Picture 1 (tube, rainbow, N blue to C red):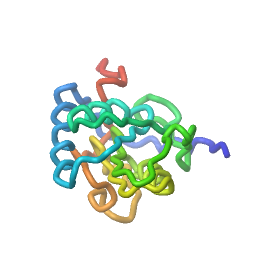
Picture 2 (cartoon, one colour):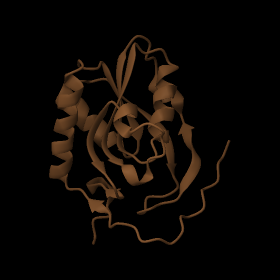
Picture 3 (cartoon, rainbow, N blue to C red):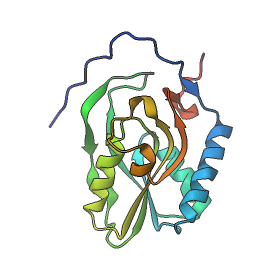
Length: 176
């Protein structure tokens, strides 16, 4: 079922976006690796396409995990800063996940805004029969968070909490 974009937010003053560097990402990946290993090294890493793929692959390398998979789940309708969002996450090609039965799986994304994409994707993974699903994100944008519980009660591993739009170096929007 196709969903239409949510109407743009009212014209309000928003904090300036936070532009992360590759060094920031490296430090965040190390923080996540340290958190993840404290609970045991997972057997597979799943990255949410597209933004979650860079941290998923990087984290898999840090953890020594070769089983890296992808799934496309998205809410944003574009790549721009403060891009519109669809009301519900859209899942494409869930078959790309393959067989997760009995595996310890780490789900990775670059950012959690409202938390709904990560939650929906974690539920999708759990339906595939893994022994365990853990979640990890580089950043949480608390300004967009809509879950009833705080981010650290919904997401297992968080590198940083922020209150503004985050721009990652791989997005090509570092012209200021």
